[in-house]
Amino acid sequence: MEAIPIVALSIPFFFLLIGIELLISLYQKKDYYRVCDALTSISCGIGAEVVGIFMKSILFFGYLYIYNNLRVYTMPDTFLTWAALFLGVDFFYYWFHRKSHEINALWAAHIVHHQSEDYNLSTALRQAWFQSSFSWVFYLPLAFAGFDPVLFLTISGINTVYQFWIHTKTVGKLGFLEWFMNTPSHHRVHHGKNPKYLDTNYAAVFIIWDRMFGTFRQEVEEPVYGITKSLHSWNPVWTNFHYWADLFNLAARTSRVTDKFKIFINRPGWQPTELGGFQSAPEVEKITYKKFDTKAKGDLVLYIFFQFVPILITASVFLFLSNTFSSLQKYSLAALIIFSVMNCGLLFEMRTWAAPLEFIRYIFILSALWLFNGSEKFIFLAVGTIVFVTVSGFWFFLKLKQFNSRAQRLAEVSFPVTSKRP
Image (tube, rainbow, N blue to C red; front, side):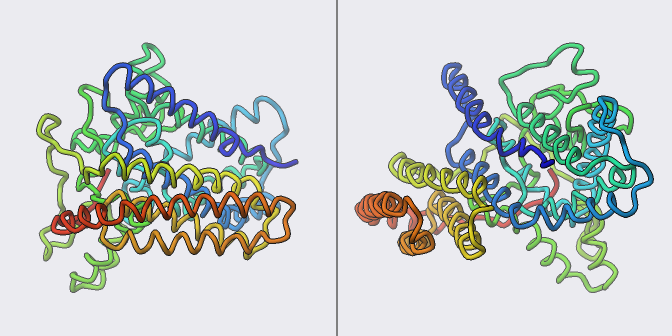
């Protein structure tokens, strides 16, 4: 028996709901979406799934080993077992999520999900690439208890999919459901950077855990979204590493070895006395608050979107057919996908070095064709790829002077390296 890939199978529905929410926001004349932010969130999701292909089997080994060798009981395949496991997964998710906000080294991975200054369904896809490297540890008690590994993966997938729909501003409060279910209202609070909303509402499905353990907050006013020191970047690679850079830079500035260690295990905001002590989150005013924006123009946005569609298609094919690829094909395609989403972000930021990287990317795309030489549909793949690269290259070349001019003007504006707390 194999686990049903519930998250992967849900991807088309995710994008359908994102499209519906976008239409609703346009109809209501609400600014729920910004292209730069939404595509960055989706890029993070793409990267998380691609990186996950190489990590899942290795990380799941721990659960599998304990179940096969150290379990104290074998849970029967009954409805009550399914229900108990669903509750158990949700309970341990609460603690994994809570500790991801309370320990700097864990927050360094989880922070990615909180970086968006918008709140919409695309935000749900903004996932950290390396969070799964530690999240699995929190669920090991379920392996000791004897819950089947395949059933665990299935239930975990359902738990993850549930959390997608609560990332929206189009749904208000839901009456009596607010008492025991995690709802959009509760989760909006969790994504707020307002000091009164920080470190609250960690639940996945059932808000009862937050009520039980004292981390529940009611939505009184709409939060200001993002992390307390905004990330001034659309680059999905940097989003996954910037906080690590902050932590190591902070550790390098401390003189005591014990303080260097504490920086990684204490909560976000902690600093030794010599560096000023604990840094509390600043108050934010929604009326005066300004989101990060590089003001990418319509023609550039259109070009990036034209690049993004085949990236999304390639990533989808990679996820569903990766088992049929050779190791060389896997690693090469993964690198190309990551490189592509990274440069889309750099183009949005109008970095001066994004233009030469884009032409290098064309070369990599054409080179990747060699990996699939000999496949049945190679001729169609080759023709389509060559046409796409030719059109893209000609289009970008025509806009190159204009892009470089904008990039040069923007180069004088600094992009602060920042981050801290949700």
